Length: 422
Image 1 (cartoon, rainbow, N blue to C red):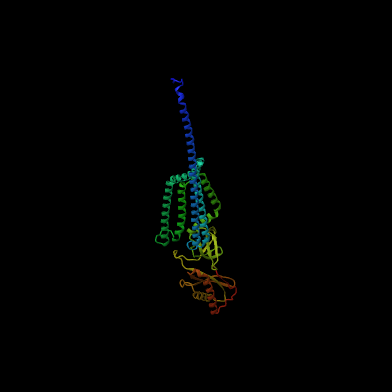
Image 2 (image 1 turned 135 degrees about the horizontal axis):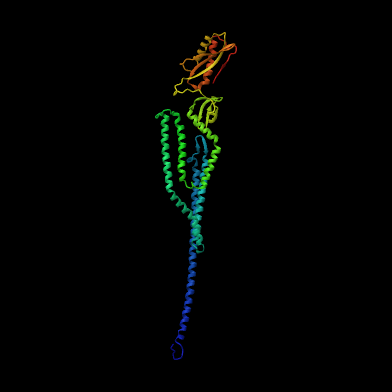
């Protein structure tokens, strides 16, 4: 190392320069730290401003959503009486206009709260993502929100082939059902006839086939339903099957009895029949019950199992079977002092004068018994107006009294007897 004339090293002259450089670097570092600190403050302020803007925007949006639902609710309440009708099936009213209006208002409230909750659930992670300290929490919230939605969307996409299969099955079943309905209508109107198949079998048979078609369709669709192979789904199916089998034994019995009665054809709607001690007109014939209306307008309901196990008397005639008119008959007793020919003539004259009876075949009299003190006579008349049987009997009795009085025959004979058989 060289020395100068004063005997000093050449490095001694560089020491002040190094000192000044160190001071400069220290000042630069402090300046950088100050600038970085200021930038952090400025960045935090900006993010805070963004967060406040997001909160204000969401608050405004929530207010607009609530205002929108409030206006819709007001329109529903104002126009409910004009646009909404009560929900009823035939004569059974299920929901009134006021109840339907309340249901709409309730659903609107639920929709309003769901939209508000979704907005808040979106707002919180957005605000958390602006700040480094809460950024991970925002990612966690976003994952909890969007991962289920992503799974739902992916599941729906993967389910599309099964959905297409279900749509094809339902479409085929729909058009098969339409074809069966058209066939039943043709059979009912007589445009199409099948040997041994009666027209009144058309709709009952259609209903049976329709139920079987529904069951077959459900069996085909079931494996393609989401979750059909899960234990929960299978457990629910078994539970429903057990409840149905335990609680519907009588209903199934009546259903089967209804099917048997349908194909036995013992009577039709409007026929005058007698079941047990009840005589009346068939007002309703379903797969479960038979309703009979008496001449006093009393409606009596019989389960189909009771009808199937009872004797049924049908007073209606069937033109399809080529039977004659219904024979009404009543029994009259007369003493032996009155000639039987006179009784015959008198009863026939009374029958001929009775309205609502057939001219041909003519009324006829049968002598049914010879007892100790009197003979029994039975007057028989034909009628096709079965709905007026009670009236015909009343008019016949009136004419019998008038004709016997005109013939000079006293009805106060020993053991006089007369009875309406039906």
